[in-house]
Image 1 (cartoon, one colour):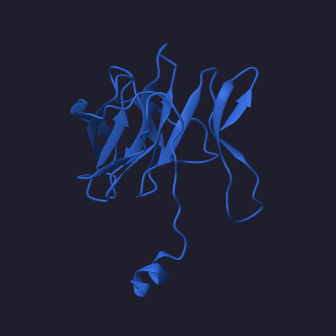
Image 2 (spheres, one colour; image 1 turned 30 degrees about the vertical axis):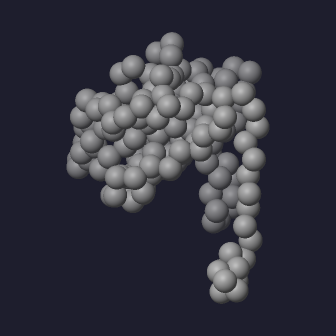
Image 3 (cartoon, one colour; image 1 turned 135 degrees about the vertical axis):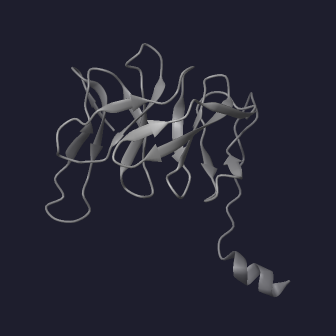
Length: 164
């Protein structure tokens, strides 16, 4: 993400090979965030406030090839898109904490189903989540409403298991 006074927050790409020169991925006068490239490398999903509220958009992933058409796939607001491992389903969170799924069909052209609500995550505000490869299980980072979250990191846990 790059913040520019004229274009707000934009999405940029840093190639890991070649000259490693950054390329604009999505650069508009609006705020773009939470970009996720599909596992098959064909699409990028992100949130943008282009419509006045954050929504989820998908466009072809073609760095440096101009601005491809983008498709709005959310309808009631959305953030933090996540792809299923086969790139055929996209998940996102609505502002009210509900998790939604959108079926993706991509051949010569892009199409998406209407968003389907899956469940209420009971989580509001800034947080993160992950989805398993099959799109059946979800892991949410959630803390107490009024304080800090204690985190315990266990290093070298296999050695600890062997001792027990």
